[in-house]
Amino acid sequence: MYLCDIHSHSQISPDCDVPLAEMARAALEAGLREFCVSDHHDLLDYDGLPAAPFDWAAAKEQYRQVKRSLGDRLTLRLGLELGSAPYDPEAARAALAQGGEELDFVLGSLHNWIGFHSNDLLDMTDYRGNEALARRAMESTLEHTLTLVTRLPDCYDSLAHISYPLRYIRKDGVDLTMEDYEERVRAIFTEMARTDHAMEVNVWHGADLASWPPLLRWFRECGGRLVTVGADAHRPEDVARGIPQALEMIQAAGFDSVTTYERRRPVLHKL
Image (cartoon, helix red, strand yellow):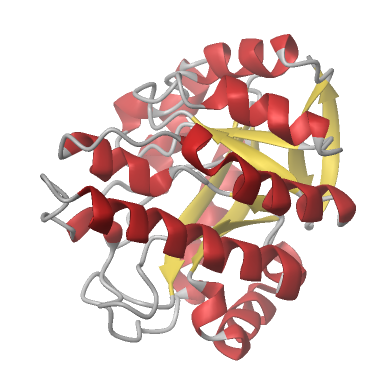
């Protein structure tokens, strides 16, 4: 199988303090053939306020240095995890334009509860015993995800972790599943298939393998053909964790390839 991990972070992300060189070294040790750094640029910060511009100068400088040092030992790509693009489409497009020709890959994500308090869903601590609030969080995320895929197709290449809110909803003991939202998810997947965008299987450094088989089946049934994989690592020890299992799941779901990106164009690799 083509071992790749194209969702990972470095010290450019606000929630990671590890230089890209260390993350790339871990990718080599894990036997990856391709690795993409996709640092966070959320248009809203953890507190729901407009975030500072992305530091493209620093991101590109460390990328160039590490790419030179790797030579042909590992294919390194420059990506971006662009969060909350529906909140401010102009700002999202301006950030991507600054990526220029070096930008290989854009993950479209929604970490914030846009329009409620706009905080990152990670910081919601009152789901416990409040299923109604948990459902509102999930519904809001899917609503804005539908906006992303229908109105801003230029602002993402692969849809990141569609089940993101469930990480924290389940942690607080509320029993929700993606099956509760199958009709809405299928509407999102149908639009993604129509525009030939990818779905990410985000295994969250091996901690979330169970969510993906039904989602892969729905995506394929909706006409989707492109699938990316990411461990979402913020530490070297989490690079590529769960990736072999993700590739096996993709193959079991009937897909014959995994997708990476170069200059924002999909490249398919046989499984």
